[in-house]
Image 1 (spheres, helix red, strand yellow):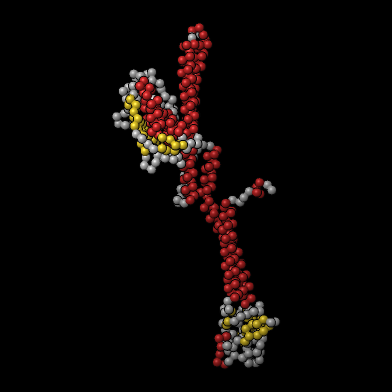
Image 2: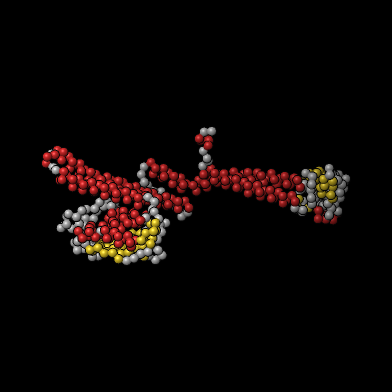
Length: 435
């Protein structure tokens, strides 16, 4: 069997067939119930196919009741109509007679003319009536079924047209870029909700791909800079080996290599925070903060910055390595982007319902809200080093981006605000358990 033959029918065809099948089933059930009802109801009205006549005049009023078993009978009995009846026989007057034919029973009215001529008339039986009812109902059901199929096909096409639009847009996006949107209008139904969800997904994917492109470009640039510096130093030393000593080349190459290592480790940490599984271990955030600050005292003294830590918090569940890196980056950022005589205050507190709150505030020059938002992007550096301290090493622009990724990985929230007197305040709220 070919692939085309094995292909399933379209949704439109299946909807039409389902609608037609349900309609046919309901119609057949209705006809069956009606047939059974008419067959087994004990009393019902019968009508004559042709009324009896007497010398061309009607002699039988077609209004009588009874059970007609034979399919049809043509009766020629003798009967007389009473004079007061006006020449008519009335079933209500009890002038009906039950006859037997081939073992079946029929009820009929009879009469003869005064001259003795016999008037014949035909009475429809129960089977004739039921057969006619069944045939008429079947024809009517067939006609209505054809109409239902046509209407079902049309209605299914109208209802599925938004899905076709979604499919067309998705196919176009697959072959080009993520800039297109469905932008489906119309009533707020399930299909509109699907289209809006698809647009929101495209928006997130587009943003993620754009961020990935920027990240790849910036990472390549940052890694290329120290590697190019090492190559330059080596080329110069090889060009004039007698002019350089190992004692002069060693520190330069070591500094460039250290910077490459720092960038690589930062990239690995960022990748782990964004894509790796978060470990679930008990972490005392206040103990982590005190340990990190104790190790950063020497760095703070060299930068002439006062470093303090305060507060207590309960335990939370998370990745101890990533949470420690979060505190390290915030403290390092506060010391690095500060001024001589400035301060870095680290405060830890518990949260209602579990979890912990970490606030790191440092002094420094005034920042705009745009500067703060851009500082959370990878490889964006804030030029907050003082002019009188050009020897202070510059960062690689990944510290706060890693912090934001670690917070997202733990299901927390991050708030960064520039205080009115300068510097930066970052508040991290972490839940008790990572979802």
